[in-house]
Length: 376
Ligand code: T4K
Image 1 (cartoon, rainbow, N blue to C red):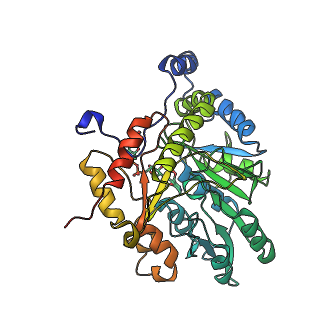
Image 2: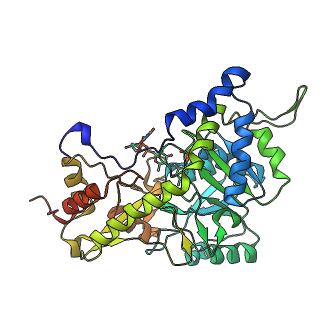
Image 3: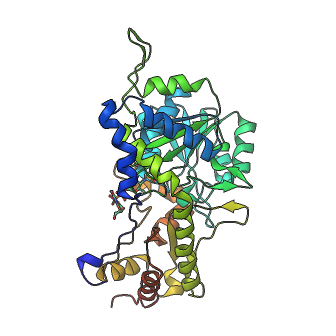
């Protein structure tokens, strides 16, 4: 692990065998149909509907566009409040803001980094219209408590399920909760379409709206009814998804072995915490978050990050800084109001996680972690 060629990054895209992809895209050379909801797009849509066990799904160029689009399609009143988490990727809050809604940050739970329902409930005002929770690292939110709050207060629930593809709770697909769930199929995800994303949604009437939004609001050759954007998944990305989906079970099984090796290695290290899914959850092993409590472990998260970087291991501080601490938002929000999120952002590190990471490399990464001593 000492030179560029054996550098280990936080993740590595899974790809199907080249021949399989070539076979999938070969017909495109005959049809010359490359985008605008072609054959591969529809094929992937149908395959995902089945895999995820959902009635409604629409594909997009990326998860972010899917999230923006569903927020718009639900026609949430301009400037109304949407309760969300500051412990996420930029996309979650940006989508809310870009749709002229006001994000309100609730705190998270220390045991799985997802929105704390108690904190959510305290922040509800007459202007609150929706909750946008995140199944961060693929760890499911407290879906029952969140739905209970939403039902009692008449709120929509739109999950950012970017990390949670194929996760199940009590045997139910993760997209079966809330009004809608957005998935990211970015190259760094468990299931990728190079760039891509999707939204699954409860109300079937939204399907034409989402289809039109991603194609400029065009309804027919001479009819444009909506100020839509352009966010259509193209045929090459869809074909990548069609192929990758065939290998998904194998991908997740390999990730499980990697995760278990990490958990085993780090189990008895004081001040180090790993995050296993609850028994009722079928996990996807999307990320490998670990927290370091400096008072107990004897070194900070940043010490661990630096030690790994020195040995050519690229861990990532997902998610530091908190969104509420971004230059864009920090004048408006006070992160002290979400102390658990502040603590998580300061102590968490995502260690390398991908299907082909060898167990020997996991052992070496863990040995570096365990050997970390603070810089003098
Ligand atoms: N909501 C949440 C909670 C999200 O985490 C995200 C995206 C979204 C919404 C929005 O979904 P999308 O619109 O992206 O579909 C990455 C991804 O770009 C982003 O999709 C992801 N979350 C975020 C957590 O991570 P970076 O800036 O960390 O990516 P990057 O380029 O540093 O890549 C990380 C590692 O992945 C590299 O060190 C190596 C590996 N990699 C990367 C690329 C680009 C590959 O193996 N192949 C590749 O092609 O943002």
